[in-house]
Structure formats: C-alpha cells, structure tokens
Amino acid sequence: MSSNFRHLVMGLSLLVGVAAPWAATAQAPISNVGSGSVEDRVTQLERISNAHSQLLTQLQQQLSDNQADIDSLRGQIQESQYQLNQVVERQKQILLQMDSLNSGAAAGAAPAAGADAQSNAGGVATDGQQAAAPATGAPVQSGDANTDYNAAFALVQDKSRQDDAIAAFQNFVKKYPDSTYQPNANYWLGQLNYNKGKKDDAAYYFASVVKNYPKSPKAPDAMLKVGVIMQDKGDAAKAKAVYQQVISKYPGTEGAKQAQKRLNAM
Image (cartoon, rainbow, N blue to C red; front, top):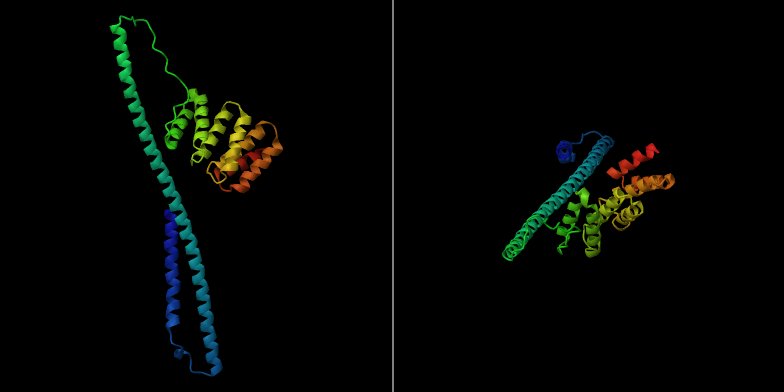
C-alpha cells in the first residue's frame, strides 16, 4: 500500500508541475500577441489554443490516473478494515466462549464434589472404581451463531472428533440459515466429508457454496474442490470444465491459480 501511496503523491506532484506552466500561460493577456499582421496574430492565437488543448488533455489524463490510484487505495483500505473488524469480532467471540467454558467447568465441579461427599457419607466404596468417561458428541448449541460456529470450527482441528465436527456444522446450517458463516460452514462440511472419503457428500456441500454464495471468499476454493472430486473419479472432461470455470469466474484468486496448475498437469 505504501508504494501505491508514493505513486499517488508523485502523480499529484507531476500534476502540479504540469498545471503551473499552463496556468501561467492562461493568465497571459491576449494583448501580448505579436503586433504583426492579422494573419500572423491569428496563427499565434491558434498555437496558444492548441497548446492549451494539449495541456488540458494531459491534465485530464493525470486526473484519470490519480483517480484510479485513489480508488485502488480506497478499496485496499476498506478490505483491510473489514479484515480487522472480522479479527476483532472473532477475538471477542473466543473470549466469550472461554468465559462460558470456565463458568461451566466451575459449575460442574461443585455438584461433583457434593456427590463424592454423599457417596463417602453413605459408606459407598470408591477405591478401584473408574470415573465415568466424559460424554462425546457435538457441542451443545448456545443460541449464538458466532459462538456455535467457533465451537464447531474448534472440532475441525481435533482429528479425533471429525464426526463431531460434521454434526456440529450440520446443526449450524440448519439453525442459522441467515448467518454470514453459512458459506464457511458448508465449505467445512465439504472438506470434512472429503477427508472421510465421502466424495459425493463433499461435492454436494462444495457445490452448495458455489451455487448459493458465489461471492463468498470460499466460493473459488469450493468450485476448485468440485473439479478435484471429478478428477478423483476419473472424469477428466468434467474436471477440466470446472477448472476452466474457476479461472474465468474467479480470476486472480488462489483457487484460479490452483485450477490452472491442475489444467497444465492434465
């Protein structure tokens, strides 16, 4: 971004440099035109007019170039601001989730202690007995979309709980149909099913991202994964068609770059 800013400053400096002589010329009174014949004076006026026209054309081009740079910088600033807001929001949700987990752990510890006291008071032997294993399964939904999404995503990173992650994301897409995390949730359902070898289910979820959320940042990768699945199944023609679609529909994205690599290798 700093290089773009320097380019913009240089462009504005050039604009001032171009405008200065034009302003000086524009301010020169027409009475300064030579005192020769009428034809000579008309010729001089035409030259001045042509010079002004050229300078105006240069100024317009400079303004157009500078406006393009400004628009580019504005877009980068907006994108950076959006990403920053997402990070801040995610951090807030993580902190809330940690507070919730800590509160739940503290609440669960008290009843457990009471139960142990009752058992000992009743003369129930506990030596040699094993504690009951904690129940597994998808986390209980909190009613907050951000919290539930983060909880489901945390399961993705635990290789031993991939089935729980699938269940958590399936519950999420049903419970929060209007959430901005819907494309991400469907994408992870596609990836989780692909990792388990369920390629038809994976293709369904990846295709859902492309069809229902074509402007999502996950859409290029989701479409790429559909092509990968077609290639895995041995359908080279369909795979190529999908890869070409990724390149044409999402140019410049990482998904398009990977699609081009796969096309080149086929």
